[in-house]
Length: 335
Ligand code: SF4
Picture 1 (cartoon, rainbow, N blue to C red):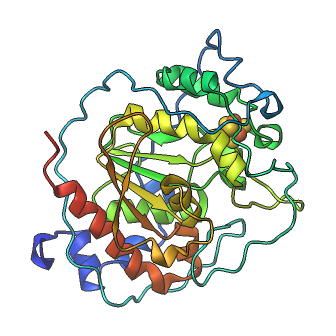
Picture 2: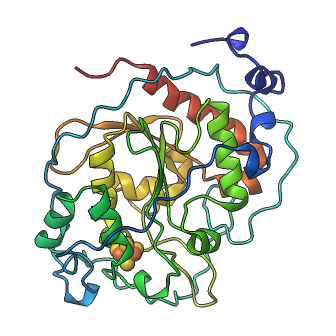
């Protein structure tokens, strides 16, 4: 592991201020590298069945994603290995994003109000073998078009637009959040607004940026809302309905490291009990296994940026998680 002296410029400033505050202080989005979301895509024939309403779907368990054609080899990019996690923070508290619905040990409980979109029972797996297999064969263009026209779960009715994902499609890093919030739904890009700026600063601390060796996606592609129109976490049903899309994104990307942002993302990716506290998930390396494929991808769970905005003293723990993930990236690629 490298030490303080290995960092230069802004990174030295980070470490002088115990690593986190300088880089994770909110900065203007204009200072960050921008990657525009992909343009609208031509309609692909035969995608209607992929976007079939949930009511028409077989409640059988989600089938394995077929092994896809080998993706293009990601260019080798040296990853910085940050020093050990800082022990304290000096960052001023940031106002929480009004629509943030992230979890964490200090986060308020998710309101129990019923969702506007009336999620279906979580026990039903909203897909058929045929649908999942069709998705598992798609290329990026087909996949994005299928997501944009999807109505496989109730979230498709209430969205402004689906939020497919953004970033480098040959990235070694994959960051996964829970789902689009109000701003993401309006703009069509994951992690925008204050939490998005914080995430950009977290990436900058690792000399990364969205669109440069990083891809960002969500568990669900459409915004979940409660009865009052506020953001909420996706249900298990919604996550299961959208899982083939995320699985195909992962299959196409073949990332070297995955970072789950928030409890909902971690639990869904690792298929764990919903009551698992995020504190029991972070600070260790999990293994994500893609259905139908051999091998596994190291996965580190950490706090959602929206939670870090509400609880800035937890940034040190998140920084430690990023260091852990970076150490995984620094390991030799499997033969
Ligand atoms: Fe389809 Fe996923 Fe949107 Fe549900 S959340 S409608 S499964 S794209």
